[in-house]
Length: 444
Image 1 (tube, helix red, strand yellow):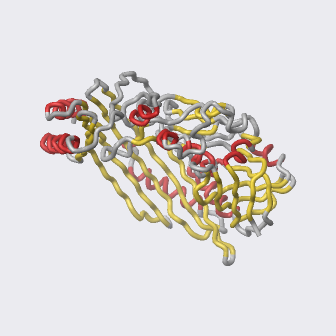
Image 2 (tube, one colour):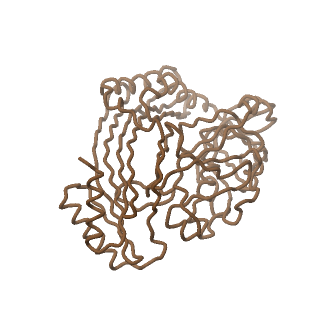
Image 3 (spheres, one colour):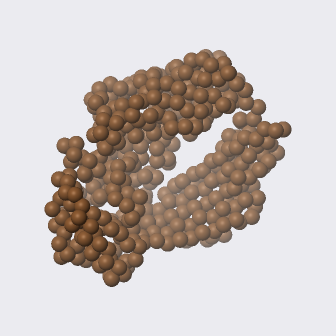
C-alpha cells in the first residue's frame, strides 16, 4: 500500500471539499507481546493497525477526523466529516500548519531483523530471564517476564508542501520478582528497551538487577525525621526531570502555570545541571527525524549549566507565544491532535563516580524508589514517598522504606552538588546518579 500516494489524494480531496489547508497523518504498524510466568507461556498477542488522521483548516477554523480504514470510500467519508466540522468551529488565528520542508536523517531507528527472529527464540529469552531472576533462594515468587516488539511507518504531509516519512522499530525484555523473608515481601523489576534486537541487554544482567532490587530491600529500618543529603539513583531521576519537563511545556508557560514561566535566561539551578532534549540521537528510544506535525527535530539545551535556555513548543502554541515551533509536537497516533512532548530528555552526565558520591556523603538517603508526583510544575513544591538505602559515613548502612522526601524546586535545583557519569541514554527521560545536598526527610 502506497501511503504517500494516499496522503496526496486525501489533501487534494480536503481542498476540493472547501478546506483552505489540510494535513494528513498516516500510521501503519504491528506489535507483538508475550508473557511467561513460572516457566509457562501465559499470553502471546500480535496486532496490526493502520489509519489516517486529517486536520483541516477553513478561514481560521480547524477540525479533525480520523479513520482506521484506508479504503478510498472510508477516507472520503472522513474528509467529508472533517470539512463539515471545520465549518462550525470557532476561528483562531493561531490555527496554522508548519511549512518546514527541511529533512534530516537519524540513523538506527529501524531494525529489519526483529520480525525475522523466531517466536521460539523470543519466548526462550523471556523464560531465561525469569529463571535467572528466580535462581536466588530468597526470591520466592515471579511477577512474570515478558518480551515485546513493535514496528511503525509514519507518513505526514500537508497542503503547504511538507512531505515526510519514517520507519521505526523497538523491542523490550523485562522481569519482575518478589523476595520473601518471614512476613516480609519486597519486589524488584528490571526491563530493557532498544531499537535493535541485537542491542537488548543480556538476560543475566536484567535478572540480576531485578533480583538484587528485591533482595536488597529486605529488613528495612526507619530513621528519624531530619534534613540530610539525598542521592538520586538513575531509576529515580524522573522525579526531578518530570517536574522540569512539565514546567517547560510551552502551553503551561503561556498560561503562567509554570514555576519557570518568567525565568528564561536566568540562573535557576546549580552550574552542574544541564538538561538536553535531543530527538536526533542515533538509536535513541525517542529519536525521530520529525515531530508529530512534520517539523524537523533538534538537539536543544533546555538548561545550560544552570541557566534556563528554552521551552518546548508545537506550531500553534509557538504562534501564540510569538516564537517558532521547536519540533516538539507530540502525537499519540492517528486518532489524536498534536500536543507537546519531549524527545530524548535527559540530565547530562557529570564526571564523578557513583562510588565517590556515596563515599563523600556523611549522612543521607540513597533514593531507589519515589512514589507520588515529584515536582509540582505550577508551584515547584516537591514531595513523595521514598525508599532506598541509608548512608552513614560514606557507606550503605541499611535499607529504608516508608520515608517521605520534600523540598522546593529551588532547594533541589540549586542544591545539586554532584553528578555521576553513569548516564544510560537508552531511556527516553533519564539522568545519571546525582546528589542534592540537603532535603527534608520525613521518618519516625
